[in-house]
Length: 203
Ligand SMILES: Cc1cc2nc3c(=O)[nH]c(=O)nc-3n(C[C@H](O)[C@H](O)[C@H](O)COP(=O)(O)O)c2cc1C
Image (cartoon, rainbow, N blue to C red):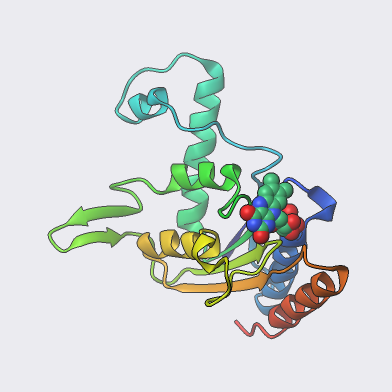
């Protein structure tokens, strides 16, 4: 079995999403001894934003810039790692109501028509294996639960889960710690609840 672990917070050791994603990975390793873990720190080692030259390369243009060649190779590795993974764990902080741009840049390399989705007579179809399981470790400063004043600004874990579902993944679990900026007490309570949720994961 293979597990792909992604982190995207820029806050390093202070990051809540990193703490939660690593706890989920530890839980999954305990549940699946011998599972092979591939780790990507998308904040420390991001790909470039997509450009016209990237798209031209995908269409077969010859690229000579060594930096772009290396970047295209990294993006290709992202795709292979996702396709090969049985379990994907994504550390995803909320930045400006959505995900960090580094995580969006990862999505731009793996959401590719003809590879991970296609448009057919019945509309879009996800091409990733239905057997994949995804865990999203979502952290955010405020509260966006349905009915809360800021609910309509939540383009964070709902976006990420929606995108992965578009690619064909249906088994998606969100472990959420929110309200982290409200007070030290609410931060502690949110993290403590998220850690309990992780400890309760059984597969
Ligand atoms: C650049 C930046 C933008 C943020 N934008 C939001 C936001 O729009 N809404 C929110 O609730 N929290 C926001 N926050 C707070 C983070 O979501 C919160 O600190 C969370 O813990 C970040 O995850 P991390 O600890 O894994 O880095 C922002 C934080 C940063 C650094």
